[in-house]
Length: 113
Image: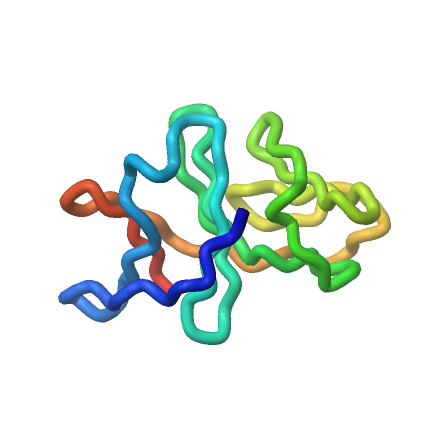
């Protein structure tokens, strides 16, 4: 389920609050619109990864895709992307998806755009 509210910017300005850490337990994911960007944060294998929520092949949301071994699979055509680098790992996708730095501050997950 996506949250369509726009989080408030953090005090530093470079990072934006995404959601509270408690809202993203291990092996879960959440998509939020920040300005004009749909960002997907996945909490898997003990790390947080922030990527574009839009598949580079079909311009479809990745939110419902399966996350496994630090990859996400597009639920529409099966293209897989590396969560760390954004690289397209198989056809039909040939272009990477955007990735974003993530940090935890005061029990908030923040993403740099």
